[in-house]
Image (cartoon, rainbow, N blue to C red; front, side, top):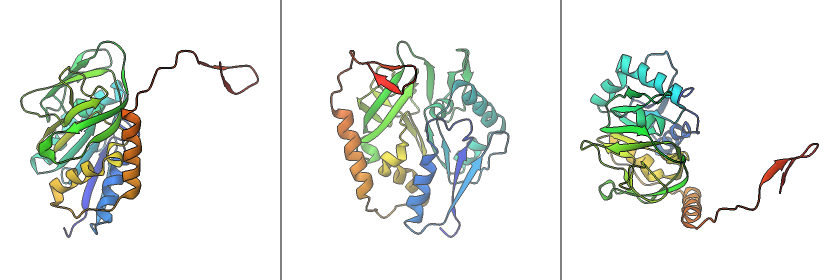
Length: 258
């Protein structure tokens, strides 16, 4: 491609709670290592979203900022136009939820989503879904095992227009009871995996990139391979819950275990 591959990070001040902005760095570096020129575009709340970028990234965030981001994206419908023009989208956690048909607002009300993914999100019951997660991807995607970290209270159900990114082998994923994690439709990928997800899963990064630039030559990533092996081993290893040790701050001292 003669022109730079443009990667838009949408509303990082609203949807940047869990370090998901690192996904942009991963995409940019993996393109540059292959000789592609890259343009990173950061779009803040209140600014117009360009329709001409190749990849759009949305990250995790709290309920209030998530609702504001959804309102802005619905008002301008620039992301809809970009998708219609062939752009790819990677949306994580809150970003994943707001791409659906409905999601949950700060007061528990049901809010309209962008409708770019055929998924709906409701408030879940019980404890938050927190911890390491491992996913067996949909075989059609041709990806290896996915690793990440989840932290969400909501449950997302897939409609007939979306297929899961994969099935959970460790963790909770969408929490809908069918073992699914994330959703895929065309060039759109939604997931609950933090990490950032693309730093832990370079094959998924290349999958997103290849959808807009075509087939990519493989890269040698020994450091990333070592990180993946470490995180996958840790996730598959049983972790007994410690009940006898607690931490307390004593006057005039640092944190001590008791």
